[in-house]
Length: 221
Image (tube, rainbow, N blue to C red):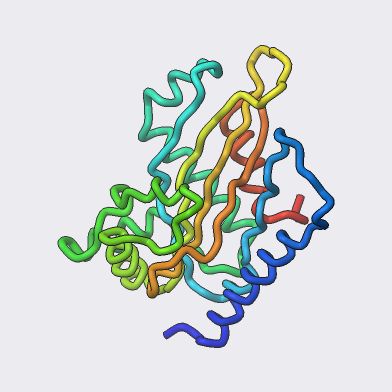
């Protein structure tokens, strides 16, 4: 059973973070090139709780990067991304008890016909910023799977997209910017409580993704 006070504190942390981000002076006018900052992962409100980390289901790269092999072996690429995200989150946010994709798969396999396959949830559409209420059947699938795993919240990597940074000088190999869409869902009520896009740049996909995940936990080298 979750601690109601701790759950309340989690949403307070999220609300305070959102208020801080919106508290800029009205006189500030961002340029068209400005990108919104990455919202830090609200780990303080999740300390001591079990949080499910779902597998990534969407990865893409702009054609200009010439990373055809990245897309061709989709399963291997998804697994590599999952491994990087899981390794960094468990190391940089140890106050959270992370339920990693491999454990979610084992949980689903122990309950065939009840829990959906974690790799086939169809979570990529949660990248859309306007989504607050998670629709069925995903809402039911997340509630069932996360409940069986012993928790309430799910952190969902909703997509990884590699792009050529705007204004970047030509280079060999080309510089790439990754956009990692992350969404936190309260599976008991089926609502998105936090979302952000973390970014990182490098000449190879894995270094770029590593830098993006590190942006979720600022203040740690």
